Image (cartoon, rainbow, N blue to C red; front, side, top):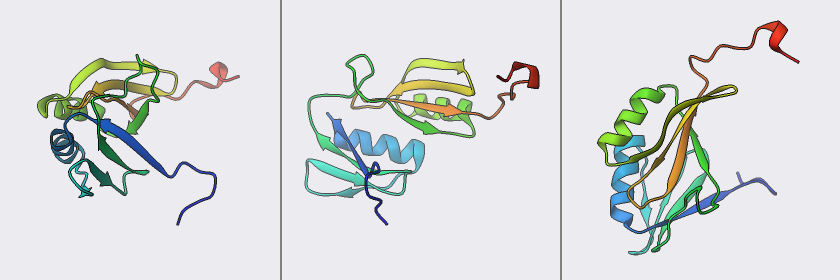
Length: 128
């Protein structure tokens, strides 16, 4: 059910829709529904969305929104991304509350993956 005033859908540019679909299918198990040669949609991935044909890409460097996925097996996911042709932009690094990395998929869009697995909660004296 759609919720009013909530993020409902997200769209990414894609220079190569076929390669992008193959990448997300291989790495994340996503499925797609095509709406003509210039658009494909995904659903049930936390938020629904799609990829549209474009010569642009979405990167943090260009000021785009960063979409962050969650994983309970971050190291093996990073390896699968590399094996499927993704490019690691920032290898796994710690941040308060977790660890994450950034990658680019075949169309050049930058996304991140984070986990809280293996991160210790702060000791009581460290909490404020």
